[in-house]
Length: 200
Length: 108
Image (cartoon, rainbow over all chains, first blue to last red):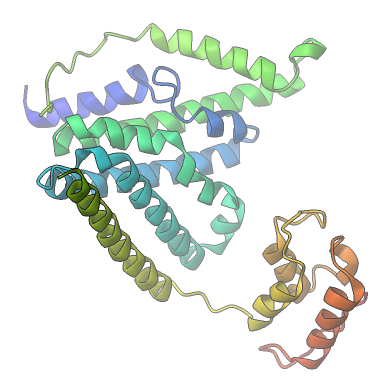
């Protein structure tokens, strides 16, 4: 199989089959917290996607060309946190300059991406991969995050107006729905076998 | 040997920290947004508890709203005190003209 086909398959695999929220359980906090409105859910998804891809792009060279030669792989977590926090700040400056309206609508969610476990989880799991697979992981995971948070926001919009028992109103029924979504996505597992492609 | 490992790890973090700090400074200069200087001044005169009792997302947000004229009363800030916060802000805004050359007369 050629490298490009594997790359595309890996993106699809990380997007729907090995989904970041529903099968790896990263980023649940923003998944539950920001999915009240479709618009804010999608903006959060796009911001997370942007930061994830940038972080993967920066962290892989730092790990491979600085930490591994210096035999300091054990420092990876704190170095990645530093990189992600700086990137979020830079992205914040950029959005503030280019689009103040987007900056306002993202509001507090922008700095909160710093503590989004999805970003750190992707970057950490990338360290076993080569550059191609780590980029596929970042892109696929980001798309998967946007897809699932959008679907979930749509479902929650319908739940608001539906007649749920009083004890289940709000977050409890949302958690049950998230569980059902995870079961649905589980049906896709094993569809694509990436094997050892891109593993160092 | 172990002590040396710790030293190298600290040096690495310091080095990376300096690099990213410089990058942040660079980007904050490149993407600098011209803002009304009165927003910073008003923010300093607010209590800076960031309690959110005014209904805004923190003291900076309230300072912006005051300078933009969205908030008509200084006492929207529930945590403020008259002599410490309200009076200086009223005095400052009525004496300092903004970029448009006008001063703001805000009520208590």
